[in-house]
Length: 279
Ligand SMILES: NC(=O)c1ccc[n+]([C@@H]2O[C@H](COP(=O)([O-])OP(=O)(O)OC[C@H]3O[C@@H](n4cnc5c(N)ncnc54)[C@H](OP(=O)(O)O)[C@@H]3O)[C@@H](O)[C@H]2O)c1
Image (cartoon, rainbow, N blue to C red; front, side, top):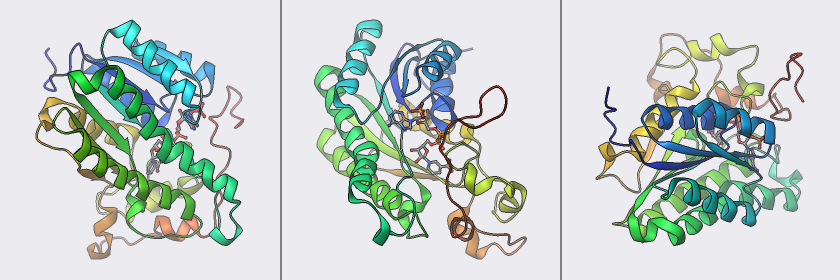
């Protein structure tokens, strides 16, 4: 069956695609007929993801500018084109009050969450999109619209990414569309410290009755990257199960994400190994 997205034969780069939302995005793009190049730091995770989506991969950190060039060159060499870039890799460190934040770790958050997306778009613009066009989707967060406990560095960098999205949308039009998707709480390793031991309760407190799955976000990204969204640029698509309108939802008020963030600390954001231990 032909995909309704008009994305067959196109080529995409997805960062942070070894697990979670990035892997679901890579899978959705591949299922819709795109050829996909994935990246993340862990080489085994990248190899597994590339095999799973039937694409290619290159291990490295998005914080390394050389890696972003190599990624661009690899995708162009293997696919002959780069139509879609999904900037998904991110860090939620340093976690805690900003008065305790180490400025060097604050800078690292901006390197990964803001600078890397800009650098990758610059690479791909120069290598392909500036001449041939394309679509960029940046993964932000529902939380970027307001302040919250302990996530000052993350929220500030994601708010900057939203602004970068709009700025690039204007600068790169009409050749390249640039949009963002802002997820609410999604069941991934990054957010495990929030939903673990409370998933049902948190879900019951949301208007749409559950926390997010990576596929919920992937479908939105696929749509924004596709020709179905050909007249949309500079937009931020909120995919949050109704988190933003929760104040008017009186059916089953449970704890909010914000409430849980007050008392919880993130782990190392590594997936469990085969023995179930987090690395
Ligand atoms: N989960 C949520 O509730 C939620 C809510 C709002 C927004 N988001 C956003 O959604 C995106 C994906 O998060 P997720 O929840 O899917 O997280 P995740 O399951 O922890 O996955 C993160 C991915 O990014 C990779 N990664 C991390 N740092 C990297 C770096 N410096 N360079 C290259 N790859 C890197 C990880 O692999 P390696 O560790 O091997 O590098 C992994 O593939 C992020 O932008 C996050 O801010 C998530």
